[in-house]
Length: 471
Image 1 (spheres, rainbow, N blue to C red):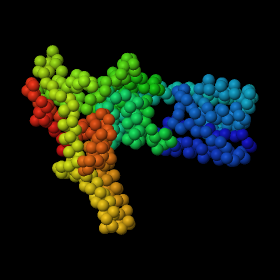
Image 2 (image 1 turned 30 degrees about the vertical axis):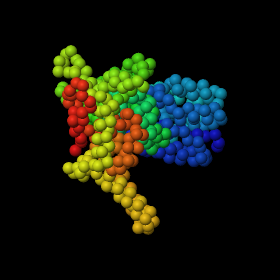
Image 3 (image 1 turned 180 degrees about the horizontal axis):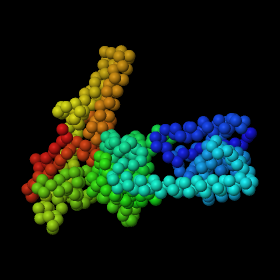
């Protein structure tokens, strides 16, 4: 028989391995063989419910095939085909112009072209709709109870594995995304940075494009999950602009603070945000802090062809009399701290242990030096091509492993693939970074940047700058 198709659907694929779909397909193909059908077209909707009204691309493609002449649809059970009466009526309307018979592995077949077949289908779909609605009510009550208890729900999400287990390297990426967004960077710009850095999204290897998009960045940033909080919105398919309702703390480790989630949601929900031009992030705004009161410094002044009056200042606050009065030239401070950071990367200090930030940076520098020496030895004919290849392969593998540990243990995603140990290459690398990339490097290496008060009328004094690095 020609013109036969197989339609497969599973509403919830908890493992992501498509095991349920594979079992359905085996049974349906076996039935097709019994009916004398070989190599039928197969349409699949994996992890898609037919009850909640969501789009089913596989089903739409199957209907298009039926309009084109397919006369037989094979399913595992009729409830895989439709769960709502309105869907059945649409299908009945279709078969009035395009005769279609349905065969099911479980429950047998029936013909929608005859009155008895339509009666049977309507009875079955009414039962299926009742069962789905009843199940949905039970699931919603159970999920609400779990949410109120702060329990993790659902599959792995970016930053977390199944059950809410923190994934350090993904948590480091989220931390940088948050810093960039709160510094004024747009969702589109953050997505471009992630793609440019070749950081894969959660399901990059499961048939997706492997790219970040602004809406996926928004979804990650607005989620209560990343600040260790439990949200709940049972009747919402897409996240609202400000995120889903937060019920309370969750039972997993947070990546950012609840205050940061509040700030992010307020920015995303601001109706004027799309029309406003975002502030350009400064290199050390919010990173440098006042040596008297500890408040983060902000930028003020102008930069023009006729002069540069930009300064980092401690803003006055009438409710906080200890604040205000401290300022420092912005360009001088940027240049000085940048130079110190580049020197630190060019000459990493021995760490307290091999797993510390300094210890891992030192290892990266030593491996880069080893690769450079191998290049020189090969060019000077000290070693053979085979010795060179073996040495470079071993060093590259060690470099990859050390950089991975640097990202995992220190959150140093900003330093991934940086030419640690080579000052000239570091300067070229630094010049190619934008402001938000440089900020990420600063926050990776520096735990505290304090600016002491200065004397009026004096020039830039580096002794005012106190830098505390990560161990």
